[in-house]
Length: 502
Image (tube, rainbow, N blue to C red; front, side, top):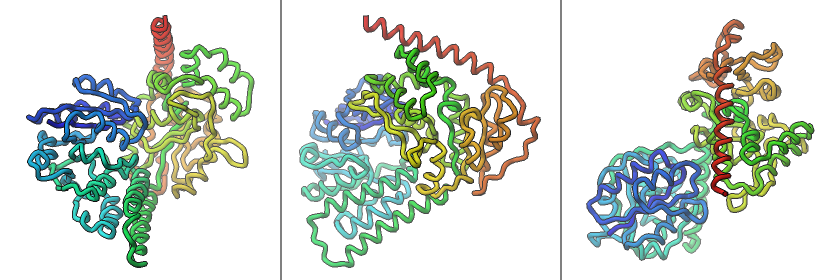
């Protein structure tokens, strides 16, 4: 009898197939999906498969794994990730057979895939120095494992990328019998350089923390450890240097086809307050503080429900996918708040978001906010301050940045970017040509692919004559119709909530 634990975070697109695959075992099982406070339809999709779904008490994979183990009814607990669609049908049998046959207490999987950089440059070298008995494991960072619950109950679950290597070390130190299991060919998503950098730090920190009681015999050992760290950092920096091209979209005026604040004010019956904020001509920081107060007492689900109701510019997902294929880092910028920006970034498969921080306590907005450091300079707030920040932090010069924004609100950003692209669903005056390098009319962003070269680190503009640039599509009519539909949808949403309250 086996308990299968699947920790998930925003894996609505894959979780049902993963559950169906693990259910193909002939063994008696229970499936426990531990939701890490997802903001998509993960829970809804998992429940369609008639499995037990619990919500972790705090965000973090380690906590989800521990709480899944605590909820498990059986002594053998198997863990699989919820975002992999290429598991073999006998994945559970492969992980648990050695335990059922009393050949092991802990099973670590390995699979056919070239080991990642963190494994090769950090995990394996550190294990060879500090835990030579574990150096032979092919993929010490693999998250597909199985173990006896009696052992899992007595080990520590790190709450970051160090959780998998930490479990391997703790199991070894507890005297557990450990074997590897080949689970075939697995395809999983490649990590971004940001994730790799974070993973490197957290994996090395976990290994070194676990090794605190191991005497360091000589300075050579310490020197080797420092060299390992330096090599990984160099590899990460090398990856960043290769990503010398970036595209940034204005979330509020380009990606969203309706104003988020206006939609939120409508849903929360704060329309008059928002009108007062906007008509009073406060400075930007004061306006943002007052806007944050509109959300006081509202939980994250309510905020994201509004974001999900707003239509996105048509074809944006395909555009993002193609830009990333061409070697661009792709992200968002907004004067709004991180909770919304991150959600849309994740939905679109983007790499980053520049946004202000909305303060949340227990997933409920407090009405306070903090301006992002990269928007501030000398006590003054301006989104264009992100350009020197990007240059310092990521070694990407403004000349290698394409900015796609609203010509009426983003003049400085359009001018400072290497290529400023004005997105104008409707006709606008000739002044836009003074601040933008290129103009896209209509609701389609596909013209951006003509501007963003597929190769070459220097952004060279294609030749587009003024007649082509001023060609107007029917997108503006679609935008007006979409706004009307959205207004009715939010009205309906509000009515539904009023009925529920009654």
